[in-house]
Image (cartoon, rainbow, N blue to C red):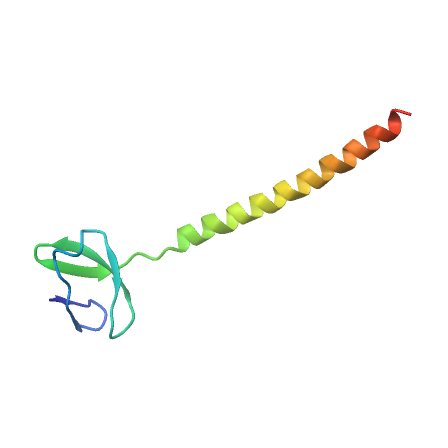
Length: 85
């Protein structure tokens, strides 16, 4: 048994089914929890993944810029073809 650090609910966790660093959700309050110790089992609030979300947004922006660059390259090719006449 482990205790949710957010709402103090008792959470049944099998120490053989989890490893340090695993994440789970409190069935009572829904908080994201991280296993910080397995003997005895201790839970702490999981770190927020805001950094990962920001990275994803930047990746999406890079992909969109890349798509625009491709369109510009096509336009340049068409212009080059016009000069070859």
